[in-house]
Length: 569
Image (cartoon, rainbow, N blue to C red; front, side, top):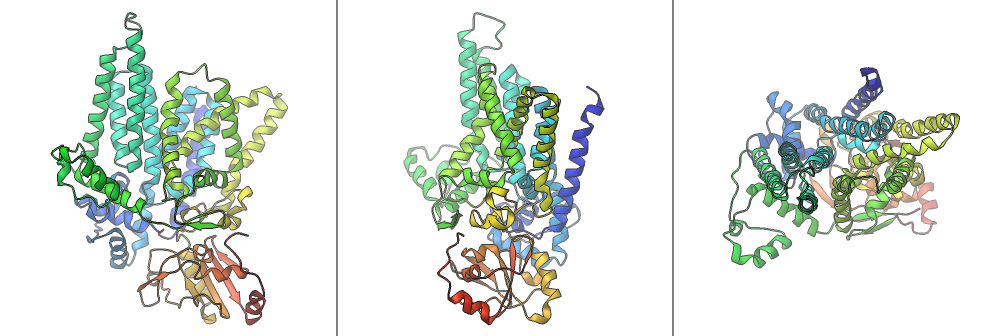
């Protein structure tokens, strides 16, 4: 195989990078993103206390170039204050977020390369190209890869750890165990849900050790069970060392009884293990306290929206429907084909090959589906690379067609995979045709699936162009709109009045939250406070996350005669 065979992959990666850079430049600072960059800057100073809810790896990386430029962040008592202070202290704040975003693009790029390499060795060149295209053309990857958040780093960490786990299980070598430990440590340093790999690795290792034990009389069946167990211990040890290093060299071994947990779950476990209060914890204190804060967040009620229904409990089918609505139909078709091929060839594969890839992401999927914290597909973003690998295998079905039909199907698949890019750069708000596209998606999913405060810059330009109409604006986002020169009144609460309004879709659909006021203070927004805008048709849109309404007295009279309208159609 020559370099020409890889030219397609190189061109695809280059074009994707251009789109991703333009997305980074076009998007205003999103909801959670506001504190991730300054948290990374604080992390370089060894201060993880303002936001322990996320491990430091991706934020340290994103903040590195900003730190080298001499930018600092003042410490704060919580993540929101940390982000607000950073934006307030830097007139050119957006420049630093863009710089952090550009650094963060390394994670989806590395994921794409690994998908290509893995598919190439496992299935072949054509399948590798298709798997690569499925991943690169996925709007969810473009959207979250171009933000300063830990989601794309966790996505890469999941795939890399699965790859290293597969290689270790194939050979059970000490070298493979070292690489697996390194990748596992990096994943734990990217996002807490990487802990799902520990039971998977333990189970796979036990199965591997059991197989070698049963075949111990045959010296050609690899290392002994004792060696496999020793390698598993090495994997765990290396992962914890990497975790401690990325937490600034924090010491480990703090006694369990020294922790003051705030989540009900860890408090209960601490009571149950009261006889073990002297037990040293094998992780840095900030890591365990971060898990504690994350669990406290998950124990608190959150408004969750699915298919026109609001509730403060999670939906068991939330993430299944998120995949149904947020993946392109071409990608979905290839996933289905890949599942068929995997089932048909299940007896040919080694038992742990599928487990290493799918067990971690399926555990993550189940845990997320059982959680009450369901605010976006990004929580299960690691499932997308696994789906891309599966989609590459689906190309084997094309071999059953005649050459002319195969060529036609390849063109159709190419068009289907590329079609989501027509919404560039509004990838965050992408929904497929079944869900009604980015406009109709609001009737199915909200929050980071659609409206995460990403179109503030477009709203600013619209407000400037229509300043003579005295517009009003209510914005779902953490950035103070005054930082973009926006200091206009909020729309009236509950009841409409004639005028020009810009309203974030989350508020149109009735989401409660907090909102910035023209004087720079916050106030709470009650559920359905601005839901009356659903009685009117937008005259324009800023991206797909902010609706523009021009309401007249006649519009209000006609709306008053309509029956009450729920968040659904």
